[in-house]
Length: 422
Picture 1 (tube, rainbow, N blue to C red):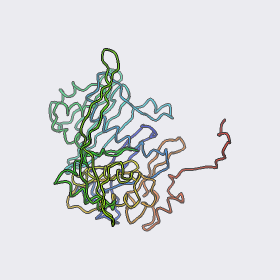
Picture 2 (cartoon, rainbow, N blue to C red):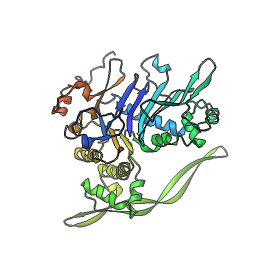
Picture 3 (spheres, helix red, strand yellow):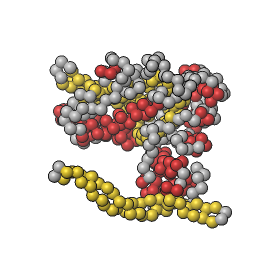
Picture 4 (cartoon, rainbow, N blue to C red):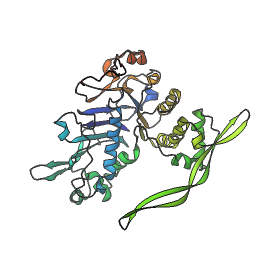
């Protein structure tokens, strides 16, 4: 389970920004919306978090930061030597534009808390660290810092970190993460950290959704199809059955031969879902393109969401409500708000503009966050709890009245009038 994610100096985020999933001592919806960890120093985590804010406030930047850090962990060891890193610092400050971008995940796995992070510039990794809490006091497994004077990385390894550490260190290039390199060289001790970031964390940025292939594959599986149909039935989209048909699809491939660009067309069979609908006058099969954008999106998310719930993954979605009715989004959130007998659970983190979800019947006060920009145009993330709302306060009305900030400040527009400053 995610405990917190920190980021600094990335896109519209200048200063240290932290999204925390740590629950407050509030007993409201404790059984449904939180999970007990069994750890004294970190007793309870929330199962979901929702982030509100105007357009261009930085909500997407936060989600992109998670995705950027995840991709760096997955791919950095495969970069070519000397290949610059694709840093995206805060550009509206001359100081920060030349400083490293920082990312840090803190998460729980099998009762152990891990705190892993790194800082980078285009010329390489400038810091990397891993702390492991098997007790209240952290064990420093490794620390790495770039020394500008010697132009070399300086490593410190803790006694609790086992394996061929020097071999992994020597194999780690300036533009690669030590974690990624050690995994390529079969580090078993670091495998849980890598797998959590790469496999258990699932991030969908703005305008994206899962490919249809997984849900389509489930539709042809006798084991997984019942869960898929139950999910679609519960969401009330009118689908009674899903079958899988093969279609021939032409693939256009470009390549360079003898210095000349060429293209080739190939044909392949691709699986496509077909949806059965029933009405008073009969039944009919619908192709994917005949379904609404919302139904297509819901079908794409079906298998990944069910799998996340079963495997205790963390799902992060920018603009979850895109093409989905408020009640469907509420239905998806409530799938994560269910008591579980273990100390781990799936989590859902998402951004939205749907203020109808700002409802004390859905979320605890420690699950709601607001993103806005300060006077320096840097993104700031503020929890609802900072405003000390009353227990039964009308959260949606309070937000729309400006009580919590994070609203767009529009002004009068006169067609034909010149912009200010011209």
